[in-house]
Every structure is written in structure tokens, then in C-alpha cells.
Image 1 (cartoon, rainbow, N blue to C red):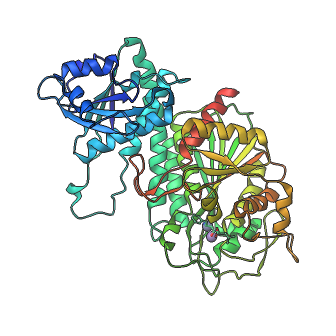
Image 2 (image 1 turned 180 degrees about the vertical axis):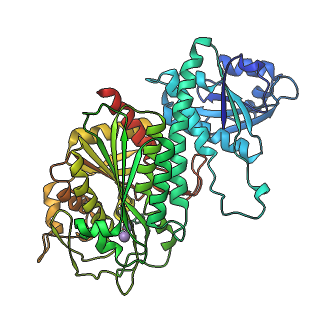
Image 3 (image 1 turned 90 degrees about the horizontal axis):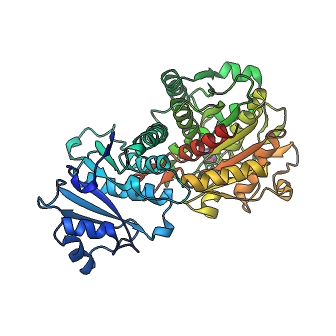
Length: 502
Ligand code: BES
Ligand code: MN
Ligand code: ZN
């Protein structure tokens, strides 16, 4: 998608589609009146007929019939002016983009960059808009060989119309940031959408290495022999049921000063989760190719952070395995010795994410990180608790959690905190080992986090359970059915502020 920024009056711009945002409580305002005059009363007519009310995400396409240089005008409802925030703006942009793409219109102009959003600078508005457009233009069509010309095309050219020449630079900067973030989101979505037969742990590692080289960070892959030598017993226990070799992918991005302690991101990388011997039911098992969405979010964030040249040091750790049943697989009742030395009684082989994360959290300690954030599609219970509109956040540092919650609010990738009171740890006490890997039905998301907390001892740590948000079931303008890329925008919003704080 190509972006241009021009200082032009919106009624004078030649374009296939002029996208105009309309507030529900400003239907009698100057903007609507101006547009109505230019279109010879078409807008008033539509309003009177009740075809359009300005409600959030509503659309109305008007042909200009030669009365404007623009061929068409697309009205997009923005809802009540007081309710407008960056997330609503992002979604409105996505709705407009999807609407036009559906009609094979791939060139547009808009003065939406001029809209005022409380607490947001011009660049933030441009960034949110561009993210919305880019998110709506995402496709995963590499496996379609038939009728490719029938697939809806992606928006190709966007022109932002600004009133003041002085605003051009800020808008351009916002666009550049959106492009870096969207590239990370696209990457994460692609990796998650990729089917299990293609994405082995090795494939993930190879992708990580390619992206690292191209974006400018380093990537080291620790293979099975080395994991055995170092004692990654929990990770290896999960991996042993699959013929595909596991690995640990380690990323390092040095954007900050040499002496700055890094921030660490850990992502669950189960390329396919059949459950192991505690086999999952067949229905929807295919969706468990998304069990590496945490890993994908970490990779996407590294790519975006490196492209945006964030002044911060980052470490990324991705334990990559496949969880399958086989004659070699671990059994319920097996006891594993983790990298930390703690023993784990595996009572359900389907609670594998916490096992590989335990070793990853232990491993990351050698970087002395100032904070660690893990992302994992960890529990079905999280979907029961929060559904698909927010990820759960838990951890051992209220301050870190507060900063993440704030990034969630600002990015629109929402988080909701669940408690991690010490009482919950009682549920994961084992009769014969240091800890067991399941805590029973009550508070499944919390007991999973309580398990991780043991291995995060001494770290400033937060855990994001993205089981409900990593995968889009229905499809929306801003995310087609399938991978959402959740976490990249959240973490980029978080990291941008972290790097500015120092
Ligand atoms: N990957 C799953 C969790 C999951 C479920 C993610 C649905 C996305 C959608 C995880 O490995 C798992 O199987 N968790 C078990 C834990 C249980 C055995 C304690 C679960 O949630 O059922
Ligand atoms: Mn599982
Ligand atoms: Zn899993």
C-alpha cells in the first residue's frame, strides 16, 4: 500500500473514492453541509431517507456524478464525537478500506487525518488510520491456485489530505510507524495461518533467521543436542512425541545503550498441539496450528521494533516444539526435571505450554532482563473467562502490569488483569514432585500462571494469555478469519513508551 500526503482541500481532490468521516452528533455540521452543497443535495436526501445516521462503522457510498473531482464519496460513520478514540478511528478506517476493496476500488483519498482525537497528536491519528487500512488489506491467499483473479484486491494507494503544510511531516512519520507495525502484524498472521505440515520448529527457526538478517537483529538457534546437554528437560519432554526436532530460538536486538538491561519477550511456540497422549477431541483440532501465536507475536514485534529503530535492547526467547501422541511421547504421570532443576509431575500432557515456557523463563534469566513478558495461547479457560475481546494479564509486578494495561488501552489490544494470589499455588502442589502441571478446573488461567510464576522467581515478570485473542473466528474488517496477529500492536505501543521513558 502506497501512502501520499497532500495539502489539498478535500473537495478538490481527484480520486476514485473520497472517504469522509461523519459524526453521529454532527450531521448538521459544516462538513456535512459543505459536502451536501458540492453534491447537489445528495447527502441531505440520504440522511432524510434514513440511509445513513453516522453511527460507528456505518457506510454510505455516493456517486458524485461529475459534481466533484472525486468519482465517489464514501461516508463512514464515526459515532458520537466524544466517544472517538484511536481504536475506533482505526476500525472505521478498516471498515472503509474493506468496503472499497469488496467493490474492487483500490485507490482512495481522505481527510480523516484531520480529525481531532482527545490526547492524540496528528502523527498518532495518522498512525491509527494507516494501521486500520493496512490491517484491512491483509490476505492469506498463498495456497489458492484457482480463480485468483476473483479474490478481492488489496487497497493500493491512499492519499491523506491535510489542511496545513506544517502537518505533512507529522502525518508522514505516523504512516512510517504504522508501516513498521503492520509489517510485524502481517508476519505474525502469516506464521500463524501457515499450516502444521509446513511449519515445523525448524521452519520457525529458519523464518526467524531470515527476518533477523533482513530487519537487523541477531538470531541464534539452539538445537536438540544442545538442549539435552544444558538440561531443558521440560521442553524436551513435550517435544519427544514428535519426530520433528525441537529448538530454542533466541533473538537479540540492540537498539539501546550497551549498558542498558534488556527487556525480554518470551513466546510459546507449539507449532501444533494435538494434546499428546492426553489427546484433544477431533473437533476444531485443526485450529491448534495457532498454538505458536505467542512466538509469532514476539517475532513480529522484533521485526517492527528493528524497522522502527526503537532505542531499546530486547531479548526474545521462543521454545519451538510440536505436541503429538506417539510411542515415544511422554505419559501422564511422567516426572520431568526442568532446566531450573525443579521437578514437574506431568498429569496432563495437553498442559504443555507451561512446560516449555518454564524452561524458557529459566533460560532468559542469564540476560539479567529488567522485565520479562511472556505471550502464550495457554489455556482454554482464558476463553471462558474473557472471550475473544481481551487477553488475560497476570504477573508478579503490579507496576509492569499497569504499564501493560495502559498499552492495551492505547493500542486497542485489550488486556484484563486476573489475580495471582498465593492461595492459587495450592492447586498445583504435587504429591511426589516439586510441582504438577495442572491445577484442576477452577481458575485454569490463574493456576497456569501460578505454575509459570515458580519459574519466574527473581524476575520482574508478566504473562499474557492470548488463547482467546490470537484467532479470529468470525472475520471483521480489520482481521479476516484466522490469525489476528494479536500482541504486536500492544507490544509496540508498550515498547515505544518504555524506550521513551529512559
Ligand atoms: N494450547 C492449549 C490452549 C488453547 C485452547 C489455546 C484453545 C487456544 C484455544 C493448551 O496447550 C491446552 O491444551 N491447555 C489445556 C490445559 C489443561 C489440560 C489444564 C486446556 O486449556 O484445556
Ligand atoms: Mn495443550
Ligand atoms: Zn497448547
